[in-house]
Image 1: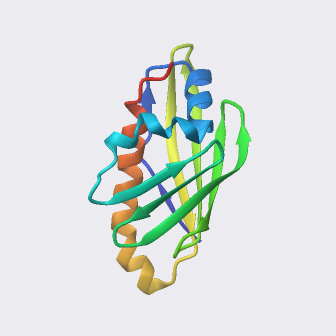
Image 2: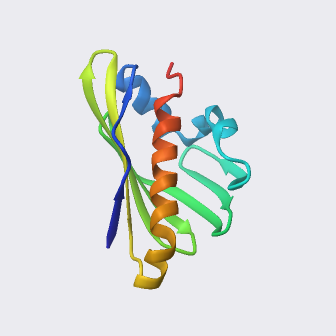
Length: 137
């Protein structure tokens, strides 16, 4: 398994609000306009899953497989050219501040790994940045 980790981001909001927002994928509507339209399209979502098309990878469906309140949200791909496990980690700092980190694990052969490592790392950091800038209510 190859593991990728985003940069740790600080979110200026209560961890409960952040967790509640991120654990319900219907809330992806809040970030949909911040995603690069040239890379991600055909975006649909419900409480437990989301589907989208990633250029040049193809169609991907992600499903929540575990929620640990105010700590982690774990996902797996159901429809993807590359099977991935993905999770969001949250750590409280103060009452109105928390840290966020994204982690992806994937079974990659050496050829695929050399092709997607850099774009996957960049994408992971971009998603972390977007999530850090959401207004959590």
